[in-house]
Image 1 (cartoon, rainbow, N blue to C red):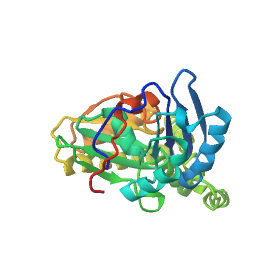
Image 2 (image 1 turned 45 degrees about the vertical axis):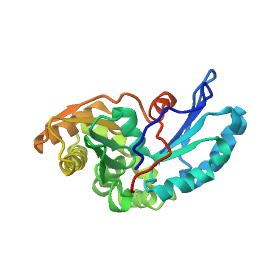
Image 3 (image 1 turned 180 degrees about the vertical axis):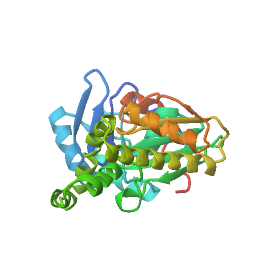
Length: 282
């Protein structure tokens, strides 16, 4: 886990920020001529090829940039971060790779102790105490975790309410995780209209996310009220988020929800929170 924070070097040169999620990727360039790309995720393996295309399209040169920051789903250990950073060195003079939830925490809360709850395609809770120690709950991917995520909602809906033939087509597709997660917005809309099955699926997801946050806060022995912020497309939906807060309070956790200061995909946020190239134990 990166803990030291520093201002990005390079004066006024642009910073490029990549938010690599399980369904989508967003690439943002700061500077006088800001640019943004959003498209289906290429995954970690396909990221260098995507950046090479964007660098040609945008006529970017390595020497013209201050740094490249990558916040990636599925990246956690120091070894994983360093391996991807080495593959991206040709794009910028400084490359920093961190997990998507770490970037989201730093963008949302900075150095403030608390809990960041992330729910998009996947799910994870990351907490930080007064001494700067971090701990996490969840984040183990669709096979072992992602409780309460868009994927979990879509999977539950497939099991409960979709004809077996269609469910099998979705589940066996090459991009099955993304396709299953993409069902979540429709389930949320059905729940809002009163569909009993959808409401139960959504309520169970909210309970699961609340449990992640409760376990994180208790593992760090954070004092209530717990500063709590959020990230990810699922928690960006206010009615769903309000249900998670109700579940948290129902599980006995006093919380102080705090709107994120910025998003991990924002170059301006990275200029403020760019981690120094030092790491603690993984």
